[in-house]
Length: 436
Ligand code: URA
Image (cartoon, rainbow, N blue to C red; front, side, top):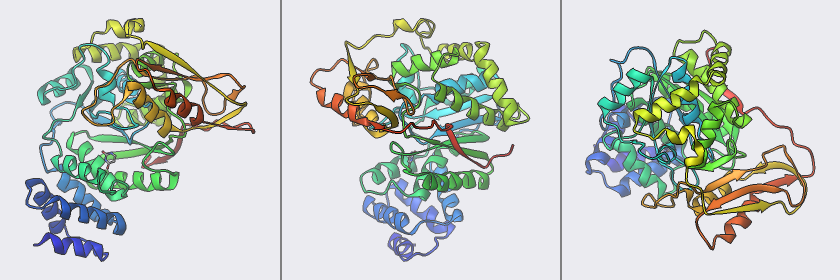
């Protein structure tokens, strides 16, 4: 078999066989297929697409390119949730403890932030002592004992994706539904959970710019999961504004705490209640999504979700005095008020601009080697639908840097104002693979 024939077949719109797809993944991981052929292949897939069987085969081949985690010796249904990447998205830190407090077992491998999107692992590390590198045994023991563990992916998990994603990033081949779907699902499937809930974002700050493409991506991933024997469902949520009010690291952990204490922003709470309702039905704990939602609401009101957050951070070495008294988190030296230049109603907040601004203030990385300033970030004071008068504070920029005035300009412009009143929409726009 020759790689060039496989590339030409896909270039000409052919359907690849199981053998051809596995030949590519095997050869790319062992180094016998060079980057230039892999990038030509990725570009051919980007233009020609893949049918559901090809996409499932690609996912399966990638998933088995390295180690997989076997959670079957942990009793009960193990659940996982994944977001395709957002700004201000601290959902895992709220939802994880809530479902675990309700008796589910959440075993999640997470990632670091890059560019305009933040990463759960970085946020967790804003609490001193917090360890995200757990051995497989530690990870499993923690899930078994307290019902939740969130850890970094080991280097051995899906090496095919590590190589291919880095290549796609620099060859203009990220935006392909079969490639995104197989990349995400191979990692989720290799992490071993029985049930997966995907939060597929769409809008300015997301990979998928509109709901139709996001639906297609969600359907593709749900199909892959089902083909490979996992209960996979998806929700579609918009990224036409950051989630909640905080964007950064420590500020997002603080917001997760306030949400678990019942005082969080409404959109974040609504998302966690809806997603939690689905996860609890997937776990077989709730008979319906409505019942699941009620249980999640109870876990917020009773404080059980917050207790579980503390238990989870303590288990991974985190100093939970910071969660119990969030004033202990270091504060940024400068707090700049970003004010409206005119009046109107907020119709959109440009997530890409807010995410990149947070990065420039010190809260994110432009390259994987950059160091993060845990105290930097942005606090929104206005959200979509709010009315604004000239001079009102739109957001606060928290930083230890000087000479970032251009970021303040960007932040002002990222609030798009309209003359007409804007209706607030529900956070979940569509459900895929739902079993009520
Ligand atoms: N996230 C991933 O893990 N892979 C992609 O291809 C896109 C987003």
